[in-house]
Length: 596
Image 1: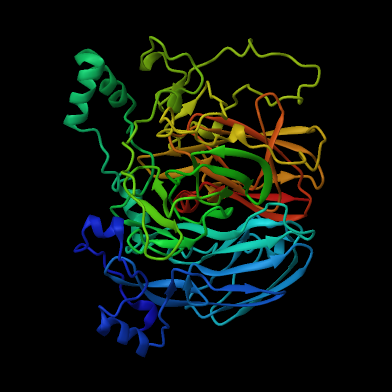
Image 2: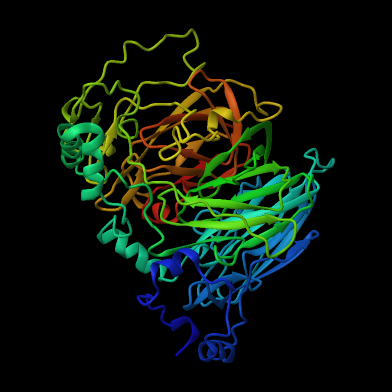
């Protein structure tokens, strides 16, 4: 059998604890000598995990291939870059032109996208948009000048290769020296791994979208509601969800039933460790390289000072916890004093976690917190800003594909320049009224100070988008000359994801004029949070009064939320714009942007 034809059987004999905790040793073990010897005879090099090698300079060589890996007790073939998970950390310098040669040893085409990096579109690495991809046996030469500094990352943009191991950190050192003072500097890269063939995972979601959701409403949960809401209240609560034909615990598509959560390529049992000396300032560069997982990060006993978001310096803000989705990065500074602290990264749907340790020496650990309880989606996640008091489903400012409701926009404040603040009038495209859309929100909320479901009023100081202020303000301070409004849409039962009800294959490109200042409004008409990544240009997030907040390359949009940002398309060409949840992107939440 050829290597590319090797089966990836579902590990039905692997119990849930093994998936949640993983193997302590991580990587490839000698516990499966026959399999590994077979892989070795086939020419596969064993995957290196846990500590990514560091490459620097302006000439980089990367090789993409398959190699065996074992995170759960089952040996699987990973897609790796230079044979490691994560891929090598690239440390480059702002202002330098770099040449990165990528050689494909796979049997299928591949690609590498430089996430968040401003560069010519031909170097962006999106097959079918910016280039043809890298064919088997081919070497592609990326060449671009680094126009920015900060914490970024890179990953495959081909198929599901990213979730099978193709991701790495990209650190760009500032041209004029670092302004963030730290004694230690660690990359903390979060990811997720499935022993299943990702295509099979996708197929299962298309058949039953909640197949991995084991947090379904239960009888004990009903009895708890009876004790707090009374029998009538508990019954009304369930009647409402039944009428909507939706699930209040649809927080994530996947769970620990198939995922193992990794920190720097190590399982929770593997316990990645970063060393420090008491009194030192430690910079942690958090990168969410997961295919499908939002993480909530905290280090019990330590305050985290957020100093960077998506590679851009922000005014420092002290927090206990932050949430970030695939594609986002946050840099924090901590000042540990005790011997050991746990870096706790629980998945948003509360079925598992990644975990590591900050310690004064190897071998030390600190207590690992219990997972927080699952929190049901609230009415604000379905209805937006409408006053929920005394309402029932028939009063809701939303449609559940049962018809259309109208709303009165007469209360909107009028300004002399209508583009001074983002429009609050909701415009649903005709294409939203179709089988690909099961939910329309007519009264969206903007509240950027909402940390999101599961983090509200948990007693911890949680970072929100409203807390972030890019130092120096926006690079382009012009007012926009026009607005684009787009809606994030989907049909959960069909597992269909789209913009304005149109999946990628049905849509036409969004046109932008080179150099124009443009406002983009994104309204989320679904029950799930989407991390939206616009390639090739910055997204200047603003509040509902048009005040600039923070420069991002990936912005999470919560359910029933309406956000806006300004952008300036400064590079011609064809760009991608998509949800960074891998399966949502593949299911259709993807658009092409043409700058001409």
